[in-house]
Length: 355
Length: 256
Image 1: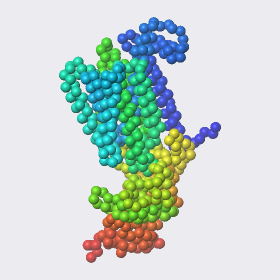
Image 2 (image 1 turned 30 degrees about the horizontal axis):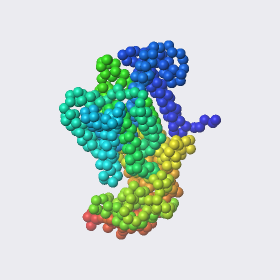
Image 3 (image 1 turned 90 degrees about the horizontal axis):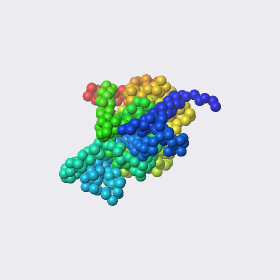
Image 4 (image 1 turned 180 degrees about the vertical axis):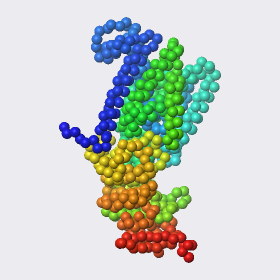
């Protein structure tokens, strides 16, 4: 084959991105193996790898104790997988929202979806809402709350005829505050200190609900689908991030595209918040890290952000489990502690460039 | 050819454009001129469908604009417009120009060698090849303008619409950009402030006054002091030098 002349350096850029994606995938796999091995009972990476190979592909002989296998397969692996999904989902939803509202400070919780989920979760924890859904009562109730919140945001933002960035932003903030007040009121009205503590724990996020169940499957499908969709529409996200007029002149209907993004992102955030509570900062910080790594083009940013988000969240969960063991710290505290300094650096940088 | 018939637009209660009709003919450059607030940009936005007129129709090569999908419209019309308040995550100049190839690609297709060559050629045409790897957000106003023109060229549409393309450009690039537009075989519509640039590079002109078309026709017909003076409210002298038309301006009170 004749080597084509790479006029704009696009080929070199693509090769670089491929290497980074491969590197990050390897890092994610290593992270997974280490995270599964870490905890009250430490299991070496080699043993973890052998157990996984045995479970997944039926390879190798059993050289470990049965409890080790139970810990790896039943307890820790679903948790790490949920961490991967939630981290990746938060990161790509953050990317999409930052492009949609053209604001570097946008994050997946901007639309008040997590506040809706929190209200739903509080209703379930404190008043037994959704009890008919059995083991899924909490996540179903939270998801219904998220759905209600996003519908509300959508309707308010749409009341002017078309959904603009600024209207979306404002209605998201307004609905968020209203539902935050609702959650607080539910806690106040229940008068249960124990319940308040459970809600608080849920609000700060946890991967503790993870097990091999329908929730994990749903999360995998929805989050995987979202990542795929956002990667495919990467070029359109680029145009939308520049401006509505630009998108329009490049053959994209900005209003229709924004509505479609809104539906998909709301669904994705709803599912991941229902599964893990609201874990802050990942969706805000990771998109910036991804852009630093591979530039602003969304075809590259989305998959890189997904991998970075997954890696970060799994490590945050490891810290949450290990730091005060056997006590578990809510993971939202860890992500906020790691994310806040980053935000400060970002503010300094924005200030320095005068943007 | 772009034909607008009886289009209107109002901001609040103020009709800016009231039942205006214009035609941009194939292979010619149509200039939209007029004082501030006369609705030049609004009219242009009506032409490319960013605004939908409640009355009348806009058609592109005899197809009503409202019947075209956004992508079909983008294959026929490329637009140069500077947007402010954009995103702080800058695309590179090369990526920005390649966005112009978007309408030619299917959803799952990525840009190929041919697209890269077209984009590189378009960057070269506006003298911006050296800017390729730089961040678009870090460019000066003039450089941005040239890159946006390169993107519009990369779109390879049959019509080119430009909103004040000479804004932010120094005198040399003002002329280079307009000469480039003039050299294209597309049907072009340009919003211009500078009447002398309009005189040199347009074929036809539409002069907008308050609410409607004050005059329309060839450059020679419209750039007549008797036509222009009441609209702009300034004294105008016309000179014909070396086969080019030039306008000189003098406020009325000084000329008394």
